[in-house]
Amino acid sequence: MTPDACGESGSFRIDRRYAFGVPTAPPEKGVIWEELFFDLAFVFALTQFSHMLHEDHSWAGLGLVLLLFVTIYWAWVGTTLYTDQRDVGNALDRAGVFALGLGSLLLALTVPGAFDDRGLLFVGVYLTMRVLLAALALRTPGGWRSPLFRPYGSGLVAGPLQLAGGLLHGTTRIVLWSIAILVDLFSTTLTRRTLDKVRVRPLHYTHRYGLLIILVLGESVIQVGMVAVDEPLTLARLVAVCLSYSLVCALWWVYFIYGVQAFRLAVARSAQQADIRRSVMIYGHLLFSFAIITVAVGLSEAVTEPLEPPRASEGTVLFGGAALFLGAFAYTHWRIHRQIARRRIGASVLCLILLPLAHLAPALAALATLFAVVAGVCVLEGIILHRRPTIGDDAAEGQMYSDPGHADKGPVVRE
Image (tube, rainbow, N blue to C red; front, side):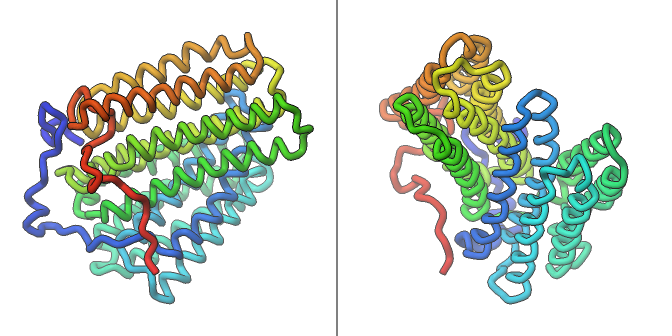
């Protein structure tokens, strides 16, 4: 969101061009069953990333997982944009969404060996998904000239780089895939004017990203349960499970009580909707999702050995992931309101300060401390919101209105 799109108070400047129909947003709709079914395959990919980080949560391991995660995340983003713009309740589009879901499943199967013998298969499946998405987008009015088709055009540059990386090995593969990812990420900036011609459905679009966060949070709970079920259920381990689940709930609270509503209103009211979609929804939720994945790995390690001090790498994924999650909110808050989210920044910095101290106490103490930090932010913002429910510097960050009628009640699923 550009500075001129927000006033000094942080409120939105409504874009009057769209109020008079040039261009107009499609009619609002709810999330459809086909999209929810597509997400199931994405969940399996999330479990694969967690397993990779569980085996290697060094900085190098984090970098490799991030590289693969961005690739699959980009396929999810492209599918979400397409289903937002079209009514996919017909046989052809429904089959297309199912085929994309199959692609996500096959991609997930190749993740463990993507940097070994399955690299070419990983790229082949991913590029097939991109071609399918582009072919579906060609069916929109205007064909290849359609603004909806243009965002998929970055594959003409990124695709050959990914294919070359799949054919090569070692560091060369990593470098080529990294360049391809950067091409995709920065393509949204280069095609900014084209993207601004596409108006998404604010309720549907933001709910899709909210469901993504639900999937990642749910995978965190699954990881904790899968670790605990194979170990003796001692009192210490049960307490660790309870603290882990409580921390996941606190992360949910931070996002869905103080975040998702602000995202929806930003997408709906911003004069620069393409900028909000790029910076807040695409980039911001990439950070949210990866942060939760890293926290989940730290939780599973803590449940495995609750009375042992976390190793340095375990403290990094646990406290570092929480710091990234809270810091991402500060970033999105700035992009929306041009205001500094002091409480989120403070909590993020506190997590980083506690990171080198994590190995000095048992994992249970680390879990309890981190939960206290995140829950403390929720409590503090709840108190401030109750006392000063209007928008401004003193309002709870991300909360836009106190009127219950403006509350986001969750996604509406179309029958």
